[in-house]
Length: 132
Image (tube, rainbow, N blue to C red; front, side):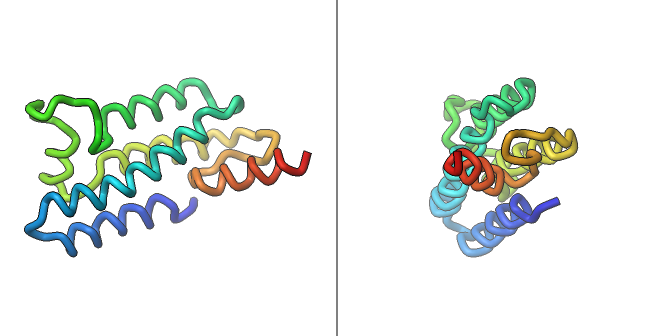
C-alpha cells in the first residue's frame, strides 16, 4: 500500500498543531488539502473503468464529509464542526478507506491496476492515454 493518504493525514495533523487557537486558519488550510484531494478523487472515479459502486461512494464522501460541504451551518454534524472537534479531516479518512478497498479489488485496467494512490492512478492513466 502507498503512503499517499498517510502523508495527507500527517499534513492535517501538522496543520492542527500549527494553527492551535485559530480555527479559521485550520479550516482554510485543511480545506485546501480537501479541495485538491476531491478533484483527484473525482478524476479517478470519472474514469470509465472505475467501479460504479465505488464511484458512488467517492461522490457521497465528498458531498457529506468535505469541509466545504453543502450541509447547513447549523447542522450538528456539519463537516467543519467535526473537523474542529476532531482536528482531522473526515474526508481524508473516508477517501482513504474507499481507495484502500479499490486497491484490494485488484482490478486490471488499460493502464495497469487501480491502486490506493489517486495521484499515481492519474499519472499512469495519463501516460497510457497520451502514448496512444
